[in-house]
Each structure stands twice: as C-alpha cells, then as structure tokens.
Length: 545
Image (cartoon, rainbow, N blue to C red; front, side, top):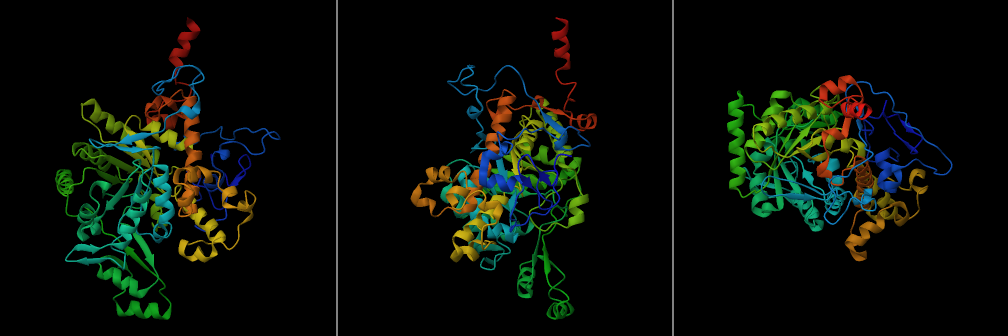
C-alpha cells in the first residue's frame, strides 16, 4: 500500500483515510495538519527528505504493487547519458545537476501559453470554498506562473451580478477573480474561464470577450471526474434557493413548493442543492455532437478568442475518442482529461466512488488514441491529465504516461490545501482580518508552532516571494499564496530530481520509457513495459558481447 495514515519517515500524518493521491478522502479547510501536501506548504523542499538527518536511516515500504493505479508505476533511472541540456550547457558533470533541469513548458495550437511549471488548477467555480479562498489561489498561481481555471456558474450564483435578456451586464465576482490573477500575471500561466450550459445561456463568453478579450482562455466543458451530472452547490437560505431557481437552475428540493417552504420553516429541511444541467441532450449521434461542437468553437472564435480549451470527464472510450478527435480537428489549445474520482465541491459520494474510468486507465487510452491520430499525420491537441495528482512522483508519471502529448498535469484538491492553510495562519497573525480571509484558527496549532512563530519562520519560501514582489507589495500577498509558492517549490524540486535521475534536463523530453509497470496487469492496461522487461534485450546484448 503506497499511503498509510502515518508516515514516520517524513513526520506527516493524514487526518482521514488517504486516497490514491495521498490526500485525505475528505479534506477540511480548518485542518491543523499534517499530510504531506499540507506540511510541504510550510517547509517546502525540505519535505523531500527523511526527517532527523544524522540520527536515522530510512527504507522504502512500497515494495509490493497490487492492482492498477498510478502507484503501480515506477520511475526509471539511468547510469549514463544526458538529454535536453539547455543552450550553453555541456555534458560535463558540473552542468548536469538537477537544479539545471528546465521545467518551463508551453501548450497551445498557434498561440502558445508559457508556464513556469507543467501544472495547472482544476476548475474552481461556484463552490463557496473556491470563492472564499480565491485570493490565495489566484495570487499563488500567478506568482508561480501556472494557469488557474475559473469554473462553471460563477456569474449565475452571484447575487450581485445582473443578467438581462439572457446577457450579463454586471459580474462582480467574475471580475474579481480575473482581476486578482491578472494583477500578478507576468506572462507565464493563464486565466481560463469555463462554460457550462447555464454559462452559455447567460452570455459568459460574450461578457469575457468584450471586457477582457484574449487575456483569458475560454473553455468548453463536457464533464469532470467527480460526477456524471452537472455541478452542484449546497445553500442553507430559502431566499437564496429561490434566487437560484429564478436564475434558471435546478434546485432540489424545489424551494417554490409550499410544502417544502413549510418543511424548511419547521427545520426538517435545512438546505437545498443547486444543480446544473446536462449538456448535449438534444444530440443523439456522434456526427451531431461533432457538428454542434464545431459550431460552438467557430462561434467562440468569432467573438475574438485566440485560445480555446475543452474539459472532459471520465466518460467511456467513445467520449474520450470524440474529445481528442474533435479538439484536434478544431485546432484547440488544450484538452483536459479528468479521471475518476476526486472533486472540489459537492459531488454525490457514492457516485464519485463508483462512476467513470479511473485516471490511469483513461490516461493510458488517451495516449493510445492520440497516437492513432498522430500516426495518420494529424496534429494532436495538447493534453492535460487530471485526477488524483498531488505529489511530484505522480506528476512525473502522468507526464510520462501521456508523452509526448501530455503537456500539463491538472491538480484539484492538492493545489487548494496551501490556500486553506495560509488563510488559517494569516488569521492568527491578523485577527482583525480573520473573518474576511476565512481563517479558522484563533491560535497556531502545535503542528505549525513547532516550525516557527512568525510568518517569516513558518514559510520556507517567504523571502523568495518577497524577492519577486518587493517588500512593499509583500504586505498585499495572502499567506495562502506564499504557502502555494512553497508547496510548488517542493514539487518543482522533486520533479527536477526525478528528471535528472532519468537523465532528462528539460521536462518536454520526458517519455514513456522513463516509467515502468510494477506488475503485469498494469503493464497490460497501460502499455508501459514491465520492470523486468524494460531494457532486457539490451541487457542481454551486454552480457553476450
């Protein structure tokens, strides 16, 4: 088993049961620690190594690989060679060091989007946790130079927004989210705005095109890995539930019914679930889906968008093939493929447990299907893999499994944890701002105070962020953004080390030969060579030479 609740080597612990990613199945914004992602948001790259150096020895406990998952893939290392050195570097050992591994990447068809790291967020939409901690998420992503996705329904659930005649007139929450990111955007990364059925009806694309133009990437949405229906949020106000119903959403139970209102007044109903609609319900053949998709892309281009992406969920093989083929035919800039089964919102639990294609299976088939198009001479859309990524080794494996088509790894829950943690710490040091920034702590828990007693002591990357923005601007940087930078620094360093061990000095040089399968079943399902078969032929040649 890859993840247990306690990791004595790193001094980390999961509050709840660890999922395939290493995160708890239920991640709380008020958590006092200390899973690996949580702790890395404070101490950064130090967490790559066992604790208490000089007093300990450490040995891996992950020697048995059972079943098919990303944890059943292993990473190759080589004893000679070097590939992808930057211009001006030589194969001298002084140049071939892991800090020289270049992690910058880009994606896009004709207009390239550059990123400092091959990472991006999942869709952070109308869930209240996304709104509460947006400043930390957006500033953190902008400073680290990675894309952030504004998910569905942000305008529709905003009481302050104005929609007349099916078109947005005022959208303060959407504006806030875009503007915060753009304030610190330095040419690396991107702000991506997602569209679902309701967003399309409300004119989100038209609003973004008119006000922001090509400062944003626009994203069509087919689905996600957490559920096979539209997005949900939960509201506890009858007035708000009625507002959402009037906005055109499906609200359950129906707040307009007298018996439901009475039940709410007497306390037997305490909340309402707002649901989005399913897309594509008027289409019943693949040909019609393709025609409708191409029309949507053409329309978005007519609005002036140079960059368009698509997000698809963990549907079956037919939908996967359609997403890759249609996105490639349309010349889209990115296709995010989200495997089952994690979510950042309110996905029905048993649905999330049981529906859809697990990430490794879905991503392996994505590589296979992309290869079919490439073999026919077609330019394949750049891919981003999502679904259970949190640590540097899983990021490496995802990029390698999808190489050369996978350019990005999309992180959902893992990239949100530093935002929560930073806000909690900031609320302790600035109690007058605690409510505004949604801090949950009155005092620092021991898991934090053992690290330091001031922000400068607590965050390993505090002065790196200060160097980038300056001392004066540092006053405006949310601690959640500092925590995100710190966590990203740990991930970046870890990926650099893994790439250097594989003798790859540019992330875009990663290949499927840089991983191997830990068991025969994983080899069969992914097409990745089994451990003892990898390079076995050349090994025999050496012996027989």
